[in-house]
Image 1 (spheres, one colour):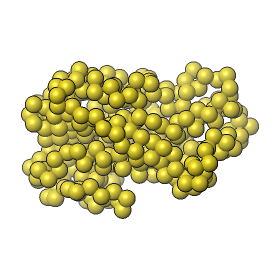
Image 2 (cartoon, one colour; image 1 turned 45 degrees about the horizontal axis):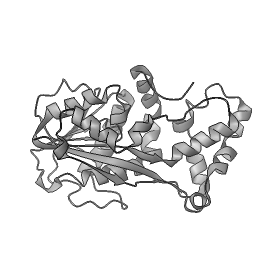
Image 3 (cartoon, rainbow, N blue to C red; image 1 turned 180 degrees about the vertical axis):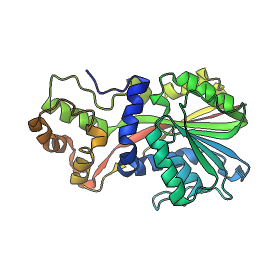
Length: 290
């Protein structure tokens, strides 16, 4: 038994459950990574007539960077884009789109719209419709990532760019796994499981090539957005929220759950306790359609 999310139905249920907590718990980390990815696009060339697809948009992390002032810890020339481009955002979890629409109203994203849509099936869009496609931390969740890459290639204008991100190191998951092993050493639970090949530079490169992009027009770089929780207790509290534990604790006894916080605490390195930060690094893959 693992806590990996395999079927489309179980993935949708998972993202439905975490939608309200996603931005609050990991939004800053996701935003820093998204900003690094967006910095690779020719932002200064985009105008009000440009069209960007925010695929697997979640609550609107990418859209927010494109259309709203950036947080204080993010400074990317060209963000937000002014005048604002048209942004179409999609996610297969209805709760994520509901959260996106709340953010749209809150921040006044007049040029953005969002739909419930599977990112590996972009049939609602025409060929060569978008100037850019951004998929932040979504490509590895697709049942058929090659089909997803091929669809991104299809809807992209010639000369346009796709940028996708995936994890390289996930210290938070290592801590979760250590805590699980200390409480249930024989359970075979694998929190937030991701196939090991997705942590390599070669995986996103091969997926984009298989989707139709030429290897001569694909580049992969690294980024370290990290997960900043403020303190040792901040890490423990964050890793005890339902976003991480709802699936993990299924079938656990009250005693086992009661041991969780101490088990997490024991996994932390001295520097992590001191800084309240867990290392999270990622791959950014940008590809141009020629």
